[in-house]
Length: 142
Image (cartoon, rainbow, N blue to C red; front, top):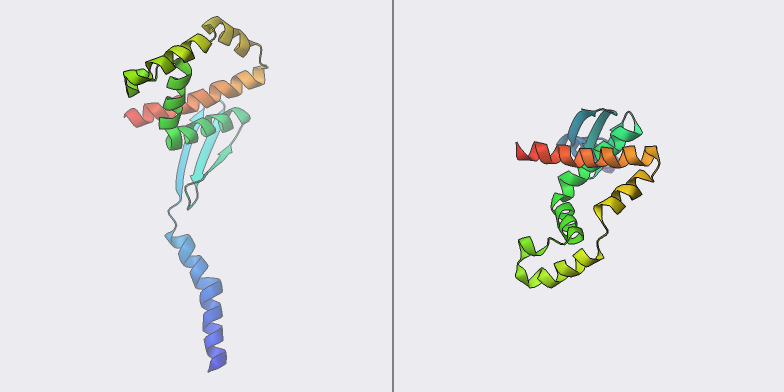
């Protein structure tokens, strides 16, 4: 009888428990198409995105989309910090912080020249990333 219990335990451990874990998992799958190709985002049981794409550009698009899904609030927060518009949302106590940020900012022309100095590949990937973020924002607004 002791041998039978060990066999049942082995079957439960090796076959049933992994089967139940996979069957009960709530994997999320998002597929979309960008100008760069098809991208599919799988989320595992912990919510971690795994991005599969036809091209490098599509990969960056999916990365932007996944980041926006998970951390849109953080992207907006950092955008406001960088632009010196933090006090608009968080109150006049932060006006001195915004003034400091605005004095540290470069001109739009400087940022444009810096972007143009990048390789075509990097420019394409940055644009695809931003397109992925914007695509998620447009979906979220619907």
